[in-house]
Image 1 (tube, rainbow, N blue to C red):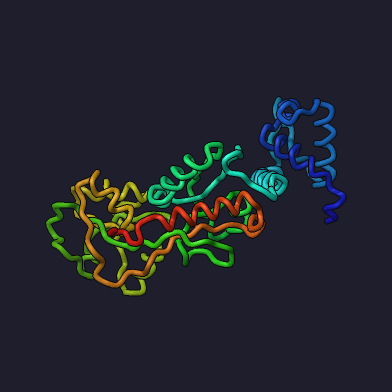
Image 2 (cartoon, rainbow, N blue to C red; image 1 turned 120 degrees about the vertical axis):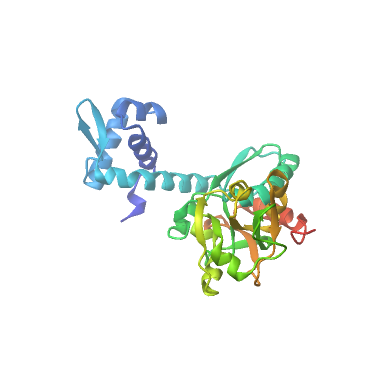
Length: 305
């Protein structure tokens, strides 16, 4: 593949065609006439040796290859957009742009809210968009990182990408405030016999993997995709849940639950911001990372402070 011979404008046309599935609407979306967009489609069909859009009745549907290219084209477009918007200088007080960060609801609640407050005060033209980390982050980390500005995730899940540490946390257990079978302490036997509420995204569970190494198999009765739902699923039941201490401290006032220490030395949790190497020397990303590190350093050193 000789990239020098490719017209990168075709990426814009391809994305519009695949998403709109209509030549006229795709042309209107990118500012091209219908004949010009038809010509772009013809060039794309020759390049891929595939129709990409196949007429079915009175409308177009994506071919098998067109369906494959749909997500890839969106990612490629985002990468190109970020590449050509890179800056040698960045003045946060004057800039107007959006940063996209992937994060769990835990990271947004504990860290993202403070980051948003600082950005609001120091860079009023900057917008932050937080999106849920997809389950594919472990399998396709490079692609996901290339299309976003950063990933908030603890150490021990991904590797081989640059990161800056933000803050430390630790794992604790939640039980109902009036739990009849748990006193001031949990035992390993309690962990095996009591029903659990678990966070269903397995990539966020190095502490759960530790339980397996200890010979403890949690009996999951309820599974949710939000850490902030855990207390609501615990209150008034016999269930238990593993949760980050910082988040537990924020949520215990809103549900009839209490915090209990693990009956073993839980693995530590160090949250970091990860990014794709393509962003390393970009002035805007440097500012974002430095601001994130500064905000993380201002958080209490431990969850009890």
